[in-house]
Image (cartoon, rainbow, N blue to C red; front, side, top):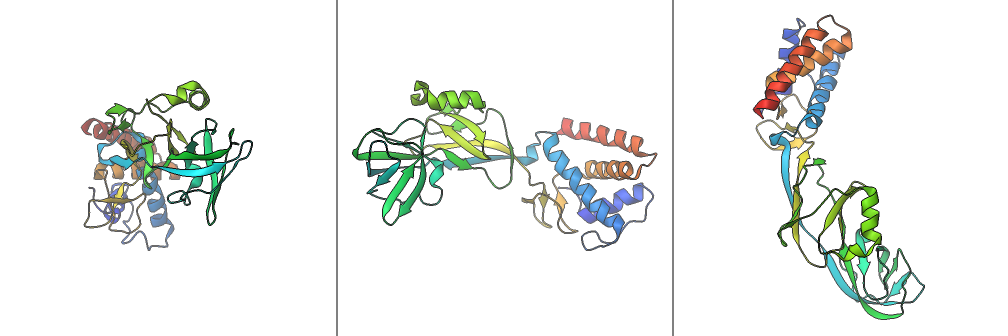
Length: 278
């Protein structure tokens, strides 16, 4: 971890020949406010700049599915007499529906616990009481998610990769064609969600690696819990020299200083050193 926000800003100020502020977060003067905004910009740029090992996180979850009986009516999107609605009411549109008389690529649109009814995204093609599978195919990313690490998506229960991310064209082909019944799972990032196809009818243990946008830790800790500095004692996952060089360059560039070019070269050199070391 690096030095504190205050220490980074003070050192950068001294190196630029500017009086170092005694506080940053609570300071209402323009210079400390600028330093805070600029140094947060440096950190946020660095998150997207490189696949830093310090920001790479393993994420695991278990896929969800339910099987309930319900009554369908041919030509109608309504289902009634659900044997249960457990697990479906929070995010019904996250569940794909399969079963006798249910067209491919059908989702649960709404559900009500009392009485136990629901609506589908497509009309059923048969009438009767049938067993329906509600398979969750849409999953929220972690709150600190920035981007996936390529080729780390695996179904660990089946010991095979989850292929993707698929393009929009390939995704619609998979969901609309006969290949939708393939046992090989694929994924796409769509609507800020991790989406799997075809619908899984098992509680599989799956996961991936991702880059976190949390690069700041509270004082005395190493856990990254923030996406920006919030108090003077916060520390960053990035090394001091990288943060200082980036802050100096951004400030000089904003002010139109003649030294901006030299600070840019220092920033680029330090960034390359850090990437190589990482």
